[in-house]
Length: 311
Image (cartoon, rainbow, N blue to C red; front, side):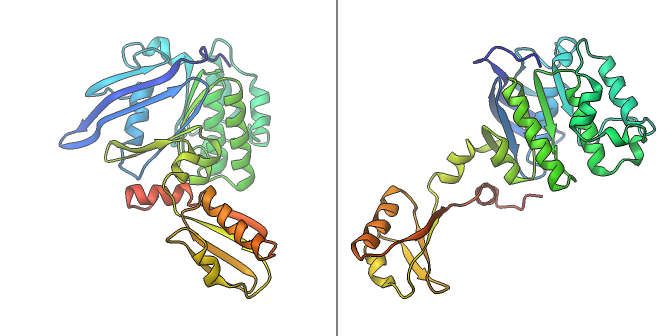
């Protein structure tokens, strides 16, 4: 791959606006994606994700705001930009009658320094279907071919639209590993996904948008940690004095035992709560076993922010 210099912004969007007739798709959205990082763009259907990505790819023109992709205007500098980016379309982008191997070789022929096609076919598990027409591939195979087409030109920046939709767990894991390798090679990745575990696993930065505006951004850890009520679980001898333990904890905490010997502490999980629980147990000669912290997930945060289902 041919990454841009570290420290630069691969994508810069400032006050982006887009309307479709009387419908406002984007209302002043701003994004900054450093080179060599993975950004997950999340939001309910209709939030503006696809419009944002299509503007960055140069397929749509913005009505207002500033867009720079690898330092270029994606519309006016399209000829210079397109060889440097890879685009994975959820619809595939392949000719229905073309065989998988033929389609990938065709796309590779457009690139100045393509990746070895045979290696990419092996990497994405497409070797067995190289002679199968695209329209006869399974949904997962079509997804993997679309990903291969996005990567074969050695892009500096890759846009992935729902990269693991329809894939089985093994194939999803292979794609996750590939995205990790891209980041390791200094390639920037912008992805949209409905899988919150995928965003938590892959993204350096998450941006949640709704109604064309950013409603939250940060690392997955920051988004799931900030201001969250969590749960602390541990095991010990049955029949602990739950009321006494509750009284020793910060205000607002609740302790319950179910089943016997398994304890759940609910409240704001922070170092003070953890210290209070372990101190109480120590002072009573109790060994707290299998102590673990459970927090809200990125899916919980998403639903809190948007008030809607993921789909």
